[in-house]
Image 1 (cartoon, rainbow, N blue to C red):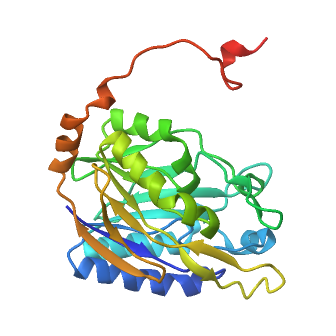
Image 2 (cartoon, rainbow, N blue to C red):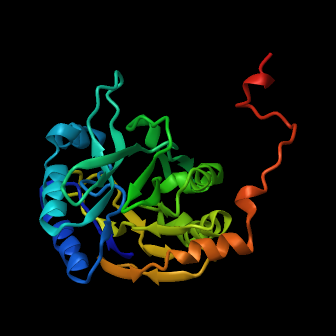
Image 3 (cartoon, helix red, strand yellow):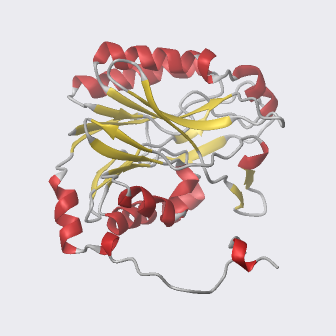
Length: 289
């Protein structure tokens, strides 16, 4: 299977982001990609929640989604929209951070809402509270692309290895990690975590990413947001097959899916789970008194 990873630097206006995204998708398709992936937040990145509320639409009305569905149909390709920020009916007004898999006929065949919210304090001057603006999902999603199991995830999910193990044991041979990784944590952890998830599961890992400094002309008083870039394709044995660097573009890689079987036959750890007891964690219902 030939895949294409699209790397973007989106700003806070979906109408300006869309033409760049479409152009790179077309470039990837012209180079033979059968499955094309875009990063997290393909439609919009903004530091301003009020601006997001003005710009975002529900899934059924989102113009970026409609255009990308039409492009997948026109090109006859599978398209994994890494994620879109979408309005929801959440009582607190929170949005969804949703990954969507589009079939070559333009139909939506899978949806995944990001499970784990990026609520972190990186330094004295840099913190994020994703859960203030986005509601978390509550289920893992395994989809099929031409009969190949595709496990969906988004960005901060990368730090929760049990999710990927569950996906692999359920049939995933490819794991997707579309992201807008912070430059500080990206430099320290991005590649090593992606390689670890590939090695642990014996899967290919496809991680399209945002990069650079994101334009936010509608919020000039807010600090500029930056992303790490380095969209990666990682093989089941842990080798990095492609690195997109730090500028927008598209990288194309041909996957030898037999490498999944070879890696898993050499280290069959997915079948070596053993039951064990203790210690009880804070989220273990049996530990509650």
